[in-house]
Length: 127
Image (tube, one colour):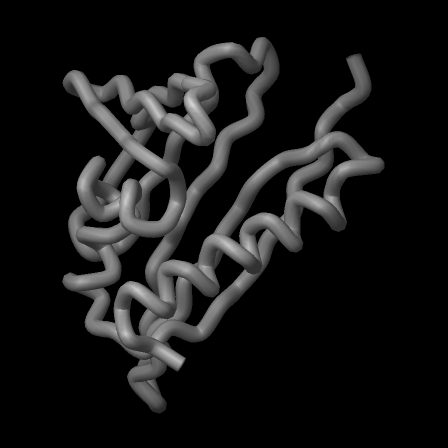
């Protein structure tokens, strides 16, 4: 298997870090924009898209700052992380995403994240 490439994306989101954190860390929040439905049992999260289920383990979280997940079926060290960054001067809130994809799938993966974050902004009433 080819090594996956890490890529990072940043999206400015007009929201409080506290509210944004609810949407990236809870099953109810994630099911509003990231997947059709999300269930969790402890650290295990089940993401459902079009009837297909993917399981991810919550590796780390820090309230109002970030969540880090790893897909259970991946046998590598890849993960995806959503981090909330607040600019100290402007107080702008950004969602910083780190993820991994096969080299030939990076652009498609970035577009997918862009679409999903666009849904998140809509839910939050952000521009």
